[in-house]
Image (tube, rainbow, N blue to C red; front, side):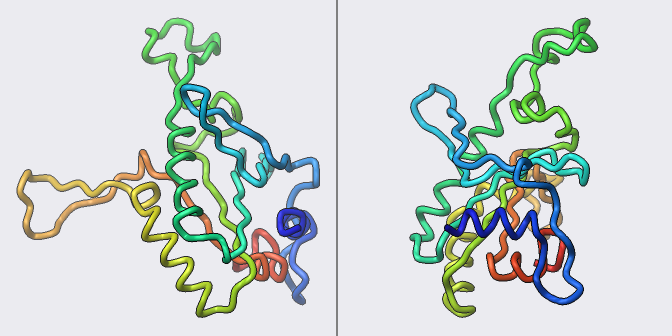
Amino acid sequence: MAVNETVAAFVLGGSAPGAAGGVGTVRSWSTETEFLLPGGRRKVRPDGVWQVTEIGVPVLMVEVDRSTMAPADVAAKFPRYRELFRVKVRDNDPARSGLGPADRMVHWCCRTWPAHSRAGYSPVGLVVTGAGPVALASWQEAVADLSAGCWRGSWWTVRLHDNDGDGWREYDDAVPVIVTTLELLAEHGPIGPV
């Protein structure tokens, strides 16, 4: 049921006075869509796939989880998303016909959703429900710690042995993750303060 409630919150918008309205329609969603990972044996199956190109969201993979699910089980989903997003396919766009074979390869999501023009991977939204504030904070912290390798990015420094801590994070291979609760989403809508 929480998946249906999540779709309704996105489409209808928030219930609070002055809350943002909904975005998209029910047709903007597909649920339980299955994507095969390389090798064809394992799959990624988001609870929902949301496409609303008119607001700049070519695709948002949505996971809806009750906080009773073990943090390790939720965190294990993010490496599979990153593996899926890393897949490159040949782009047959005539504008690329003069390029070499390596330059014609694009990330799978860019070919599947052509409006996906920003650099990086598609975002994954995690909507959580069924916990009080203290339990939810603990649960979210555990999921974040267990999945940090997928979303935190890589730390880079200028020198080989940089001991002063100067550097930067690269997010080229990081999965953008957006986390909220179903309750906040239903109260404020998908473009409200969730």
